[in-house]
Image 1 (tube, rainbow over the protein chains, first blue to last red):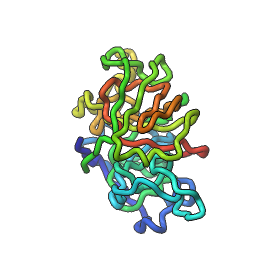
Image 2 (image 1 turned 45 degrees about the horizontal axis):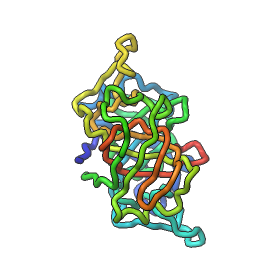
Image 3 (image 1 turned 120 degrees about the vertical axis):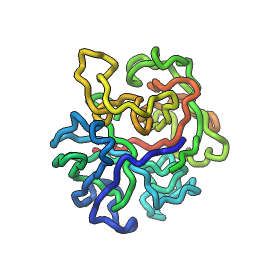
Length: 132
Length: 132
């Protein structure tokens, strides 16, 4: 099962340790820069939409199975599948972001905590129902 | 970027064409069967929880960039990133499921529309906030 990068995050965030833990915890605006060959797969996405962005957290440690949530040792250790830790067997990041602007195969977004250079692997719409 | 299967779906659903489009649209109960080496990464997940399950939709067509949503030709064609189509460059499935039972490295769940044999690649908690 081999993933293809469909694009890349361009963000002022460059240091994983300084990135917010979640998107709405102080993330700067960022760009999602898609490869030209995937531009038509964006058709229908508009400024004002909230979308789910999937990333590959390339700096993660894939051997980690248990963590203290939010890197706080006062939080009891949990299995990584019960946390949003980026350290996990398949370091897929899930980010709900707000689309501010479209510019060809580029989307300017709010609320993205991923660092500069993070590969983007998928985008999906937010559903109105419970499946999010 | 190489994914590792952390487990597999066991479901009465065997035919992609007959599977519901979304989990709450009539999915039967299913089991998520994790590999033993990942069992400790489940620590903290309990019956009654809703969790996000990520799958690899192994029957998908990765060349598709535009679709009629829900396979209905009366719906105007959209880019796949504006739909939940399983046909997409990286066929990652996102499923919000309800945990009914834990049995060692197995979880019995409601609301999963993935077919039998689908690889599981990640599990994350649902967050109370907006990032889901």
